Length: 135
Image 1 (tube, helix red, strand yellow):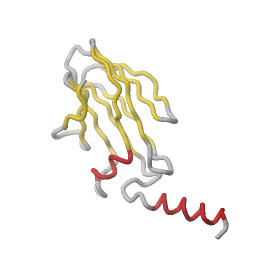
Image 2: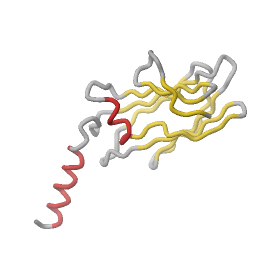
Image 3: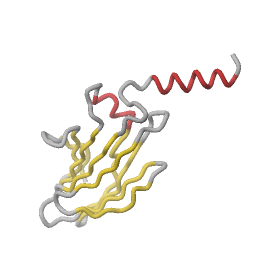
């Protein structure tokens, strides 16, 4: 087998081996300020390829972005956040970790609520969020 055929087969195998994350499907991450009525949340999210810029969120406001996964299914976003005297950097989306949690019925939306004691995750806007990170 020549080299170009080998790499073509390898690329197709990698793309097809990601059953829960399909390229072109579209994923959305929401970061929501749930700190309380007077607290502002500063958020700056990035991936290896994209800098989403700084954002300041009032209570109940959200920042979100829509993206496709890279061809290898390794897309990773993290956010630097601060409010009051608290600050931290948090992994907000990791395709390799999320693929095992969501299954085929998942609609591609990821919700992150930032609270006074940490960052909480859910795959639905409503319902019980679980604590992923502490400040």
